Amino acid sequence: MPPASTPPSSSSSSADALWFAPAQLLRLFGSSPVAMAYWGHDQRLRLATPQWCEWFGVPTNGIVGQLLDEALPADFAQQHQVILQAASQGQRQQFDTRKTDAHGQVAWRRISLSPHFWPGTGGSKTAQGTLMLMQDCSAEYANAAQADALRAQLAALSSSDLERTEEKSELLKLRTLLDWRTAMLAEHSEMLQLLSHEIRQPLNNASAAMQATMSAIADLQLSQTTPATKALLRAEHVLQQVIGTLDNTLAAGTILAAGGRAGASSDTDLPTLVNLVLHDIAADARPRIQVVWDAEARTVQLHPALMRLTIRNLLNNALNYAPADSPVLLRLADTDDPLALIIEVIDEGPGIPDSLRPRLFEKGTRGSEHRHRSGAGLGLFIVRSVVQLHQGTVQALPRQPNGTIMRIELPQGLDD
Image (cartoon, rainbow, N blue to C red; front, side, top):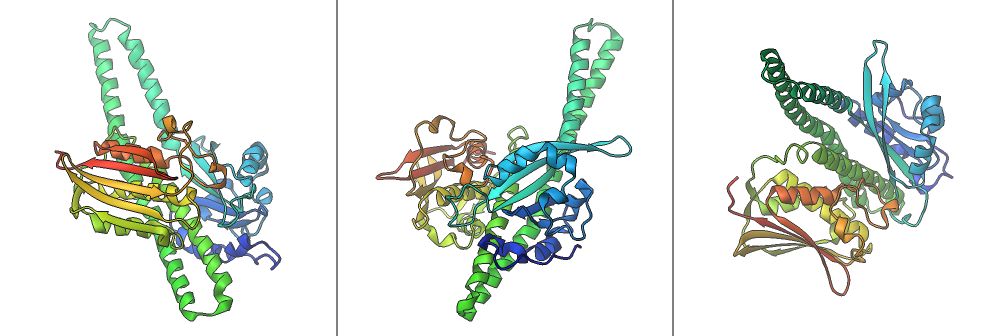
């Protein structure tokens, strides 16, 4: 594992307080298959996992502290100079890149660049740091190429005389291959879910460790501990943003895209689900959330993992777009006719512009302030997709005198 480089001088900005984190984060990520890097607004690397270094063919020793242009291969940095610059200016970027090994095998990676703005710097046009996540998408390209080839063969055979025995046999073989490919894609989806657990676990461990450290520092009641507490809060924000990005990306790419199959709903303890959702929210934002219980039922029928992600997305949206000190209400209610669970997230933000409402739940849709916030516009798309899997409805309702009510209605008592 590469040792951390010497930290920058004390004249660096407050965002450089994250310099303490690389050695600790590398120990957490080193055994996971994540390829990621993080650099500050000064373009110096704060974190680079071994998998990231391996892809770019750079040594792991001494990589932390180098300028990004020095660490990346010259041809890559030159080819993607505009994209890297846009990320440093607060614009989220995503693109695919490939490389060919000595045996002629082509590997693909999907690169996501997520700018981050610390609390209090929302008005800045320059990101205080940029996170690079690399996702292996080689199978996606290989499957697409194989599917295109098989479809072309099927089209060619279908235009011929299907009565000929040999051609019927070929069609049967091709259909068998397509069935095999469908089964392989299902297995691939299961592997992605397993991989998401392996990636998310060290991130959750790091977040828990940081929260425990902040609690221990607070118990000391020493004035000089304030800078350390702020640095830990910033580090936890980065971790929560990475966890949210991973969860949304994996949900959109696997469960929600797998023919509308989310797995069977199960009896779920509603208070436990709410507690898990609150635990997912960054520690310093958690006190703003007020839970209102208007539901008599404590056990409900739903898919707990997907609904946990759905409620978290709604709460994070409300926390991000509403005034910093305003409360956000999470209201839970139920109805008997029809039998349904009602979930509402209520904020005091500026509301949703009329021009945005028709495409609010589409993939990639983001608010007018999106340049100052990380994310890929997947949050509300996943909310709608999960609600549809539960045969429910979701609405964005105006709140008087200002704000928004995101209202979900989930039918209960349905057969799976």
